[in-house]
Length: 193
Image (cartoon, rainbow, N blue to C red; front, side, top):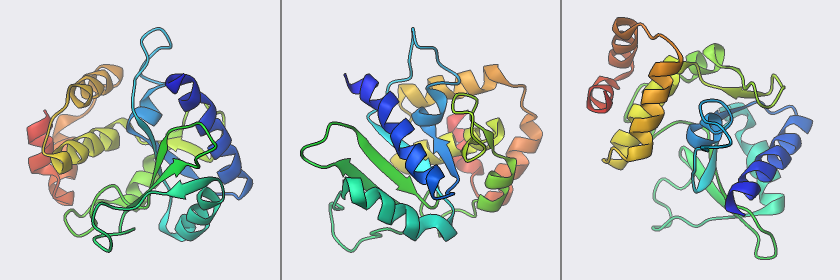
């Protein structure tokens, strides 16, 4: 049931955001589920992760707030909506949590090239819309490194996702490490790879 909800819920959410002309980049399992993984061996996850541009942030928060409840942070006031807000379905609704991102991580820790990520992103092949996008493979690898580093844990799914990304597309590792170094993500990338 959980996986069925994760299929229906992004479609509904993406329809709402598209109707308001808000482009999104699907992140992590949300992006990989219908691209790197098959229905026979799906990419499981507990939530949906979506990145929106800073200029669309307030509108996206308002739209999600109409159908979902904002999840309180463990310590109120600490980094509240600095780079992400979590939403959960309202009590009467079935669904999974949505993490709405305006940045990939705490913006003062790394110099992540968000504009570059948006310009290099491509339409997600499973959704058939220019407004529903996914990162380029090199950017997805850097995000995998950031996410693992932020959690201070390299989980099995991070490593499997990374292996699938590297298998899917030949990546110029010298260019990847140069980009990582320029964004301050090199230590995280070395740890992941």
